[in-house]
Amino acid sequence: MRIGPTVIVLLAVAGCGSKGSVTFTIRPPTLDVLNPITDQVSEYALKHFDGTLVGVASEAPGSPDSLALGPLVQQTTPADLVMTVLSGSQLLGMARIRDVVIVNGVRRDYAVDVRKSLITIGSALPDEALAAGNPPNSPQAGRILDPTTNQDLAASTAANHPALPAATSAAASTWDGRFLLTANAKGVSVIDTGSGATVGLAPLSFAAAKLAVGARDSAVVAINAGANGSVTIFPDVTALTTSPASAPSMLVPISGEPRSAVFDASGKRAFILTGGATTDPCNGTLPAPNSIVAIGLDGAVQGTWTLPAFASDLTVDSSSGAVLVSEAIGNRVSTLDVNQPFGAVTPTKLVDATCPSALRAANGALYVVTAERPSADSTEFILQRILANGTATRLSFSGPLYNENVTSVPGPDGNTSLNFGIRPPAIYAYDMAVTPDGSTAVFATRARYVEAPAQSFKLFGTTATADVCKPDIDIVEYGLYTMDTRTGTASYESRSLIVLKNDSATGAVCVNCTISNVPDIAIGCASTPGDRAAGLAAVFGGP
Image 1 (tube, rainbow, N blue to C red):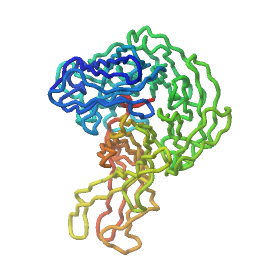
Image 2 (cartoon, rainbow, N blue to C red; image 1 turned 30 degrees about the horizontal axis):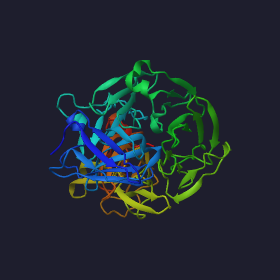
Image 3 (cartoon, rainbow, N blue to C red; image 1 turned 30 degrees about the vertical axis):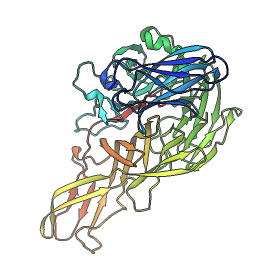
Image 4 (cartoon, helix red, strand yellow; image 1 turned 180 degrees about the horizontal axis):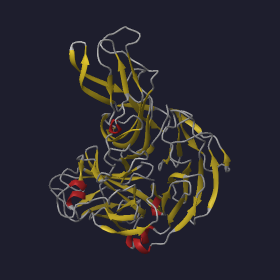
């Protein structure tokens, strides 16, 4: 087993004349739980950003400290490369290396900072208020998920374990993966992904709704959501990650209630999705159309594209450079030509999707949460994995289900245990993170359960017209899904349940049953205070 501070990878340059060499010195994290270099490593693969293979070095017990990638063709133009640390087909870690040149007769040395592709899960308070009489909502502790072990590293009791700041509302990693940026009401914290230590805090006057980092760490954008919204741009990422408190920043007012942001594949422009937080875009009154505002690294607003309808999310595919949009009202996922003139635009459909919401690109595929069901009577929903040619694989996951248990119901034969369940008509994912190999997707959801008195039902097999149960229910549930996209298995965690009317904490009831020969049955619905997941991000999960 070799888990030392360095692993040397050597390669020779093929060609006529004198041969050159390139040395990649791998620098793993100093904190053991963050270190992907273990005895499980089988190979190191070096690729271009488009996926083209450069070389592979195999690792085995007893391997020498220098692992040969083999002879390579010259690469005289500087190019960024990706190194992946693999155990078979499983991604253990990776690194991004800037401006690699391979030239005959010349020796080059590159430092390679490998990092695990960790997933952050922060916390924010629900937008909806609890009825009087309930305990207050409160945020959970943040999590740092290691997808290779499914362990929460922030829950460790070991000294110097990594942790998220309290109430982390947004997160993103730097392009090179060496730092994790997190936001809360105090500002943007910088965490070293090699040591787990917090470098410092860049103060902000708001809790950012989203953070985005440009390719090659060109800049960082923090979204101040709301009617008087704005974005704060940090144009010097090196300054931000070394001296956060004094890092320069620019405030750019944005009209139209900014909600999310991504950079283009080059990192030279940021695209701001506006329209405010719409919680039920596919249920009820149609929300207003959204816009996308383009901003330069100098903070100048370059122009605005107006979309035909509400869009849930947007992302950028780093391999193709495409900007992709979840057109929730249009029931499709589309591509947006960002070279077209500003003004009213119609994105080009990539694939049909039922009320698509959160959207992320990874490993040459697009992942989008939808409100599609496998069948009309199914309790499941669909996450689509879409390839560049539009081919889609549908991965089903169990939808949330509201259950109310009534343990003492005066039925015809005495006490009867009663359970009724309600499924939501749709599901809306408002945040998402996908590991760079696409193997793990984590998404935060909001579901709404609505039943009106007109949707009455019977109990105890009665056929009498007057014997009826009338629900009057309006409930919101925030939850969190973790999905293994290779197997399609998914786990769900309810984070909070908020009864918007007829909360039993106030003595109200949400179902009234009138049945002959038995006392009326009044069933209460109870809130479960908690939080909503926020700040979902994957190290190396952006362009």
